Image (cartoon, rainbow, N blue to C red; front, side, top):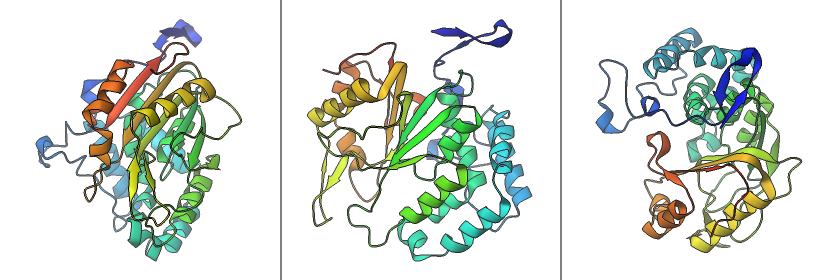
Length: 302
C-alpha cells in the first residue's frame, strides 16, 4: 500500500524488508566475520568518552547503510539532559539490580539507540506517516524513543512487578528509562488465555523484541509453561480484535535464552506452521526468532 505525503512523494506504508539491513552482516572492516553471528563490534562501553562512543555509533550505522539515522539518535540524546543519564548510571550502573539481570547494558543509551534504528528501518517506520506503536515488554525503551523521534505515537505494556525467579527487582531502572525518554508505560503481565489490558487508543504497529511473555512461571517461580498454539491464537486474535487499527503490522522477536529453551518452545515446528498458515513471514531482517504479520484489514487467526 502507499500513501501520499507532502510534496506529492509516495512512500510505502510498510516497506518491504531490506536484506542489506541484516544486523548480522556487513560488519565494519577488520571485525569479526558475520558467520560468528555477532551483531557488531560496537558494544556498551562506559569507559569511553561520549564523543568517541558517538563516532563509533556513526561508523556502525554507516556500515549498515543507514547513516541518516545517526541524526535521529543525536536528536533523542539532545532531548534528554546529560545529568539525567549520569544520575541513572550512578544509581543503577553498579547496583545489585544491574549485576543480577545484566541490566546495566541498557544504560548506554548511545549504543542502544543506535541498535534501535535497525528495527525502525526494518519495519519502515522511518518512512511512514505518523503511526501509533505499541511495544510489549519494551526493556530499555530505546526502540520506542527512536519511533517517537520519527513522530510516531508510542506506548508500552511492561511488567508491573517481577515474575519468575528474579531475586531482585530490575523494574525501577526500566521505569526510570521510560521516564527519561518520555514513554507512556502501562504495568501489565501478559498471561495465557487472558486479554491485554484496555489501553487509551488502538495501534497500527505492535512489536515485541527479546521478550519472554510466551512463558508463564508457576507460583514458586521455578518452572515455566510456554504458549502453545491455542495460547498464540488467543493472543493474536485479542490483538486483532481489541488493539489494532488497520492497515496494521505485528512483529514479534522472542528472546533466545542460552541457559533455557525459550526459543525452542517458540521455535517448535507446529507453532511456526500455525504462524505461517496465518500469513506470518519468518525471519524478517535475519532474526531467527522473528515473525511478522502484515494485516491490510481485520482478520481472525485460525
